Image (cartoon, rainbow, N blue to C red; front, side):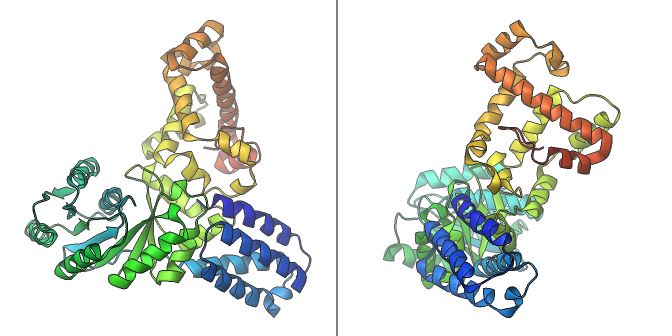
Length: 453
């Protein structure tokens, strides 16, 4: 997400950073670049004008003009304004009501609403330790009810059955009654979506809202529709008292216009980002962290939180002890690192949060993808245990057998072994001087197709 915006603003940031002093002229040039970057990101024109005016007002103020590092001071103004534009701070779900707390999900068909219900229920169960019941009030699509049933089983939450013959209000009331009797903390109500906003849809969703009085009414919208996402959210907000927005498919959105327009146009906070297809691919929306990402400064805080949630601590400790005892880093360990990265949401999700990734050439970034990592894992899986533990024995005939077994060419096996050797050298630094020294060694030496983990 924000790939194009980060690239464009990154150039402006680099140009400004080196300036000895700010003048009206170079601020004017920088603001023109900022305006173009935002418009290309499909941010609403009204939002762009307001943003640029506010940045200009603060940038030509005495505080910035007299700063010892005016370029950096300008960047801080842009960063602070981005944070303000998106809502200053993360707004958590208000679940401090007498249980069951009711969360109603609204949105157009195809926005990823039902999948988001599953993602949110998993997030509440794993991160907030809540018992969750999900129910579908979509009486127009039997497939939607079945989809939610399947997803509920996958994320290990309760599912309340419904049929297309029932009335949505009756379904929701029965689910709430069941939740009360079974002491369930949160009920998430999935509503019907349409291909476009119409009167019948709005009348039904208003009736349902009035009947269940949810503590949270979240609008789920596809970020790839750009500023149209903000306009659709506004139309829903005019009809319903929305409490927040969930932006989906942000992993496929290189522009990010929706994230930058929604708060300003609707007055409602973005509460979550959908960052992939898997049920764990949901992140709380932190405006300060997203602003940092947009300006190419990464999002280390989210990366650390993600690692704490997904990395197998026992495995990590075992590897650390093994390295400290002087036992080498082998291909079994390498495969384990690839699997851990996959658990953390894949390469795209990680790269989005790494500082300085915007400076890596696009060709190099394109080489680093989940498909390549799956291929690497398949190659390692085709090896015998002895080969994984002693990679030095993998020569000609073994390479041919491994390539045939994993459906790749011999040069792909060679490439993997070369990348493994580089990773092995990095791991030796861990043994000699700890993680800090290892990170210093790795800086600037990331081989193509390889990530520093």
